[in-house]
Image (cartoon, rainbow, N blue to C red; front, side, top):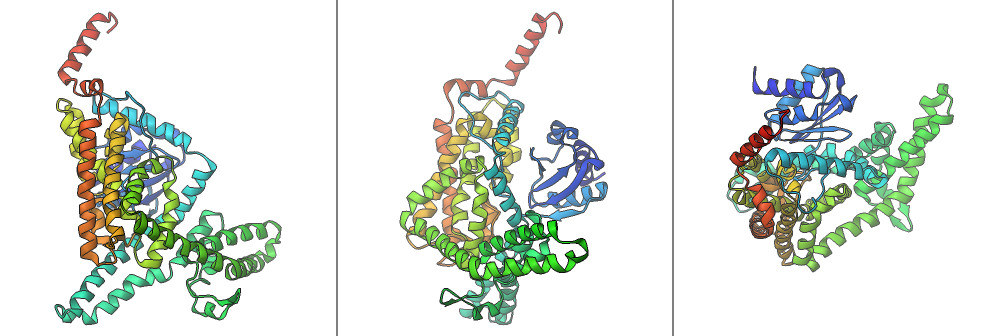
Length: 510
């Protein structure tokens, strides 16, 4: 039996068997699995599967496997459970639900730390069930399925940019006939992204996807330039994804309202026509102008924030990103990233926020060095650290820094310094952006771009990672532990075993 088959079978069994699996969504690093009965899921067995890097227990179970392996396991699980596997978006370097630990939460072994991490995650999941956070999750669900295409087109756009520059300099004259084709491949999706947002939004809010797409398609339609609103002609694409989102949500509400009173015999004709007509006219005369103002404001604010605030703005953004995610508010940033990509070709916020992952890696290395006599924790770190460097931070957060408490805070400090470094260069004119949403860590390198080209952006991003690593390490190594917490962390396994034996001898029922 291959490792892929073994993992797929063990994960399926731990999830309550094939009959309990409703759907499987395949992301870049994890599986998102809908289950019929959460009580039938054996979370402990799921986490114990060799190859599983982490588990997020939520309304949809998330099984973290890492890039590459997740695709193979998803296909095998789909075969075992006879469930269609859907491809979703990429994961960020931090999980959806987490909380900073309180003081004095140090554990002695990796298993104790993991148990503490599970407690925190459960508490945070309960706290995150608010109307606002559930709404933000729905917004995230609209954009997450678009991320694989954004990543692919972003990488192709970066490759095309390099080839174009080399061709202009006469180094690769043979690429002159290829770059226009690559440009078309990279730009085609972005030119119609409003349509895809409209389809996903309509589905998420209870409407028919194709009707949401039909209304959103008005936004990129070239003929919209013939329409005048408030004395000005509309521009194709005006309002972008925000306008598409508003249009599709309205379409879903109009459709549901129409279905309540329309006779069934006429519903096929009346409902879609009324939906597209009402939502379409509101989109043209209200949403495109309103969303255009909002989109322009977002772009201007983001640029002003880093151009004017520089290191200070980057420091605050990089340092607060993990707590922002902890409270479930990070999902509000997804439409903002998409809007910036649509406007400038890249989002300048993502590289700054990605520094939180760098601080996390540096903090974990410091924990490894300080926990000299804790073999189980060091083994956990050794297995999870490579994934953390590549942008998969869940195993490090749930298994190391979060349950320890202080190292989670010092990881934020590392992220702040890394963000400040990138913010400083943004202020000096060397902007660093990402052409797609999702990856962080080293996985973001193929997607970086900026005002001074890919090379300069990559160098600044690498410098930010290095600063984040070093600052996270230093803050954690020198300030991440109390004397008592460090002593407890380094209690040798031999001492623990002796304590267990003494306890057994003193307990007459043992």
